[in-house]
Length: 156
Image (cartoon, rainbow, N blue to C red):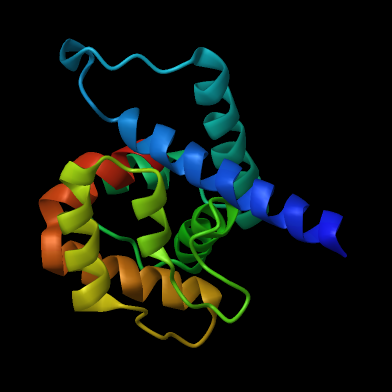
């Protein structure tokens, strides 16, 4: 029993570290942040896994990021859910846990994350995909600049 708990905690911490590294991937190169190419490859693998699982097209993701819109298509909603799930930021009851990023993100971002969590919590939808989508819509309404420039660009 103890080894299962330790394994779950290790997997969660790995997910949080990957989420942190994804966020740092959006920081412009001239800011001196260098990310290990192995981590970047892992994040891209997770993105491709979610693309393959959901059937969302790369074109849809690219258009979403470029035009800063959230398509209401079911495959896009499920892509968001898949990415949150892969990073351990949504649980089996479809409750968002963005605050889990506080464990791994720099303190300068904590106020922003807490603001999103406080304003949005979990916006319940009819299923996990819809919940992820509705919650991201709330995040964008609350702090669109941060979401588009620091988060969605990374996973999109």
